[in-house]
Image 1 (cartoon, rainbow, N blue to C red):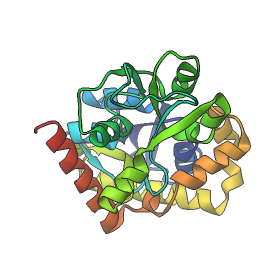
Image 2 (image 1 turned 60 degrees about the horizontal axis):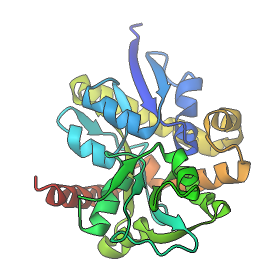
Image 3 (image 1 turned 180 degrees about the vertical axis):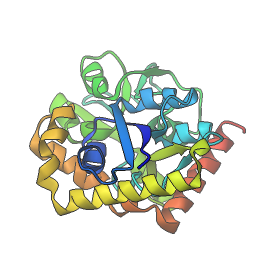
Length: 269
């Protein structure tokens, strides 16, 4: 029996570790070996520029820049409603985008960064890039005026004396009526249609097994999550893992096409 070996990179966030746990730890297909790496999503975005991984989690904003080499899988994506990035500031301040001299962003290629630019109607903002889990601390210490938060930080920012200036996901939904496309799983086009279908099937199976037995992956998820609070971790999974994670469907593809059109218009492509 011939065995195929593929590299797979995804984030340590609970939604990804929940989805991929069984793919990595269960023998779903003895013909396929998956070697995983867990990296911050902006690291993954940058790595895709040089094609480091066979299969990788990507921000949709990054995917639009590497679509000539990668294509989206039907499974594993992060889309949804009520789960978009938040633009926040310290309580008691009156900073707005127009007044801000510094805005923290989780990465230049992140969908959060793209949504902020679309919301502002301006790609020339005073942006400074920090890993997503550093933004709340920096902002609470007064080292920036505004910040865009994602992932687990959605559930903890209020503990640091911060408040929401704008819910970028809510703005997107009201503007387009679509769920917000945040991140996808992409595979190298050079691997071919057959491999793409195999991997897609295995990710779906991995997710379905996780839904059937969610406790099995708990230790793996907690070991990799930046936040170790069980309630926060479960809230993260509940928010970001949904029917779009199993299959993008027509609505998911339409949402992605809308975001790409806005990305291209913003960047005059």
